[in-house]
Amino acid sequence: MDKFIARYPIWSLIIVVVVAVFLWLVFAPWPPELVASWGRKQIFLNGLLGGITLGALYFLVAAGFTLIFGLMRVVNLAHGSLFLIGGYVGYEVAIASDSWLLAFPVVFVVVALIGVLMQHFIFSKMEGEELRQTLVSIGLSIVFADLMLWWWGGQSYTILAPQFLQGPVQLPIVNTVNEATGVTTWLRYPAVRVWILAAAIVIGVAMWLVLNRTALGMLIRAGVDDREMLAASGVRIKLLFLAVFAFGAGLAGVAGIVGATFQSLSPGEDTRFLLSSLVVVIVGGMGSIAGAALGALIIGVAEQMGFVYAPTYSIVFTFLIMAAVLAFRPQGLLGARR
Image 1: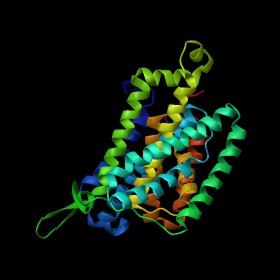
Image 2 (image 1 turned 120 degrees about the vertical axis):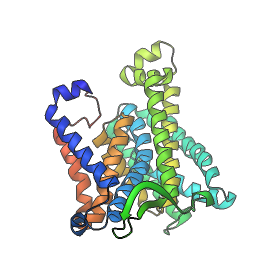
Image 3 (image 1 turned 90 degrees about the vertical axis):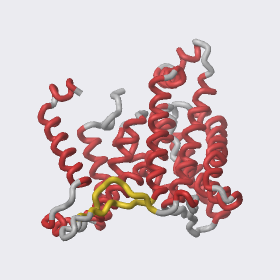
Image 4 (image 1 turned 180 degrees about the vertical axis):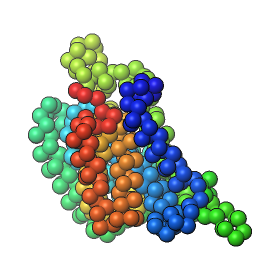
């Protein structure tokens, strides 16, 4: 941190000012002038928190994608299909068992097995051939989409959260202050979204620790940098990468349950979340878990705040951010130069 401040004093000052203004907007009561120009504070807070929780969902999808694409260099454009399969299977499990929580381990195992089959029988046969991987994975996504349309039809599906996660929770954020009585109203937000955000943070921290602080993470990174040398040392590199691919696929399936819980699932969501994953990985940096988290947060907040304050141009903000990152830092915000 000290090195960054010494090297970039102006940027450090700008960051401090932006963070201070942001914290004031979130935690302090808004004056009437600000309310007149921006609308009620609750609208701003709902858009902000909606963007953060949407970013948590994007992170769950993009984290698996950045493992498969960023670390293993496997171009799997059927990753969005794994998300949608997970959501549909989670819906069936939740309806059959009347248990939202049971759907998570079941979906993780089922979609991870699909990932194992894809890696073992398809992608392992074309290692280093990015164009073939791209074309084959596009073909797989089309096949998966048609199979899901045939089985589940074209209607939307929503998974109900369990009873203990239904309803709002009170957050320590000031919503309004009554000028006459001085009574403070605190922000209330859906409990399921708060818990999903917390779960995404736990998963992200755990993945970062595994990749950067354990022997398994060291083997994965070594296999990416020099596969032949690692294989010569006796490590079963194909089995290791098979496990990584399975985990990334299973994580996408789990994200499908999350997406079906506070949004809905329908045909076309696979393409939407694949594009979102690509944008998040490009913005955050390939192969970086922290980069995926930062990119997902930026894209989620930009998308939701755009819907609130400039709905006509909201989709443009996402691609403007991606274009700016590609122009000034092509490796991504937290990506390493290769």
